[in-house]
Image (cartoon, rainbow, N blue to C red; front, side):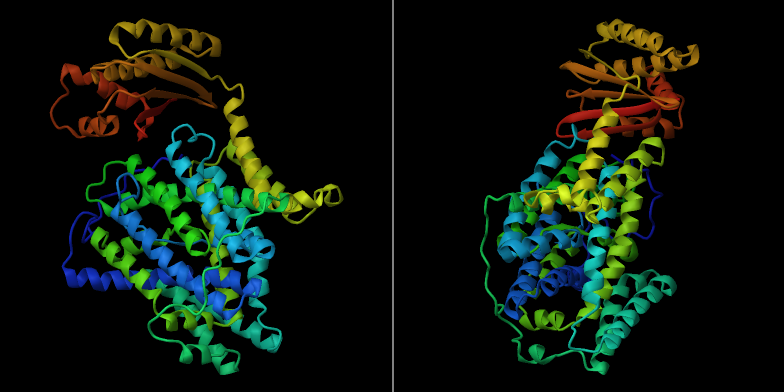
Length: 572
C-alpha cells in the first residue's frame, strides 16, 4: 500500500471539502464538473454497444442507465451514509477496464449477463475494503498496476476495430476521421494549458464528429426525432445467469478487474484527501474504506440498472486541483445533474450519433493513457528487485495467454474464456507472486506480547534473538532496540486497556522493516511526531523518547484500518 507524502499547503484551494460556497456558485460549478467528466461515462458503454452490434433502443437504455447509476453512486460517495462513502468530491462512472470482459459477456448472455456480473462482483469491493488491513501486503498497487497495463493489451485491439468504422463508408474516410480526432486530442494535451487539457477529450470528440459530418459519415436524424425530456426508447434487459464453465470464467475475470479497480480507487481516495483539505496532515483510512464501500454499492446499482460496472474517476482530483473547489456541496449538485441528464433522451441520442471512428479514436487515447496510469501505480512504491520480478513475469504471462501463445491446443474449450484472458492470467500471476514474496525466507519474525510496560523485557529478548539470527551489527541492533522499545513504551502509555500487541520484523535488502499491529490505542502517532518536530520549545523528559523515535525511524506510517492500528517504519 503506497505511502502518501504531505504536499505543501495549497493557497489555490478556494473552498475545502467542508466549506460552503454560495448557492449560485455551487450550482454553476456542479454543472461545469459534469461537463468535464460526462464524456467517459457515456462513451465507454458506447464502445461496448458498438462492438457488440446492439440496437439503437438497447443503446438508449444503457446510456440512460449509465448516467443514472453514475449520479446515484456519486451522491452516495460524496454525501457519505454511515461508513459508506469517502465524503470527498469523487465521481463514479462506467469503467473502460470492463470493456473487454463485458464484450465477452454480451456474446454469451447479452447485456443481461453484463448486469448480472456487475451485481455479483460488487460485494468483492466491499470485502476488499473490510479486509483492507490483512490484504495490504498482497493486493497492492503493484498488482493493480500490472493488471491495468494488461487491460490495455486486451482493449487496444477493440479500440482499433471500432476506429475502423462502418464498412459501408470508405475506409479512407474512416481513417481520416479517426486520425484527425487523435491528433486534435494529442495536440491539445501537449500544447494546451491545464484547463484546455482537461477539456481535450470533449473538444476532440466534437471536432472529430464535425469532420465526420463534413465527410457525410454521421447521421443526426435520431437526435432530431428524440424527445427533450422523457424515458429512453429501450427497456431493462433483466438478469441472466447460467451455471456453466464459460459463465464462471467470465465471472472470474469480472471479479479480478473489480478487485484491481478497488486498488486504483484506493489511491484515488487517498489522493483526493490531500487536495481537498487545508493544512493536510495525514490520510484518514476510515474514509478510504468508505470510498471502497461506495464503489461496491455503485457497481451493484449499475448492474441493477443494466449497464457496465462503475469505478472512481481519477480525473476528479485534477478537476479539484484546477478549480481550487473541493466543496462537498458542489459535488452533490454535480451528482444531481448527472442523474437528471439521464432523463433527456436527446442527449443520449446525440452521444449515440458519434461516428465509430471518433469513438475508437477516443478509446485509443484513453487506454494509451491508462497504460501510463498502470506503470505509475505499479512503481508507486519504488522500483526494485521484487517490483521487477512481479511486473516482468506477470505482464508477459498475461500477454502470452492473451495472444494464445501458451499451448493453445491443450486448453479445453470450457476454460478457454478464462485462460485466454490476459488480464485474468496476468493478474492472478501478480497476486501469486506478491503472496510468494511475503513467504520468502527474508529474515521475518513475529512476536505477540501484552502492551504493558512491565512486558518490555519480552520485546528486548525477541529483538536480541532476531539480531543474533540475522547477524546484525552493533549499530543496527542498537537502533532497532531504541526505536522498538520507545514505540512500545509509548503505546503502553497511550491506552488504559492493554491488549495483545503483534511486533513484526522483516529484513528487506539494506533495511529492517518494523511493524506494530495493535487494537487498543486511539492517539495518532503520525500527528504526535509531526507536532513534536515542529515544536519551538525544548522537548520535555516525557517527550524525549518519542523525539528519538522520530529521528531514528525512517518512513514512519500509522494507518488505522477497521479499528486496527498498523504502525510501520524502517531502520537503515
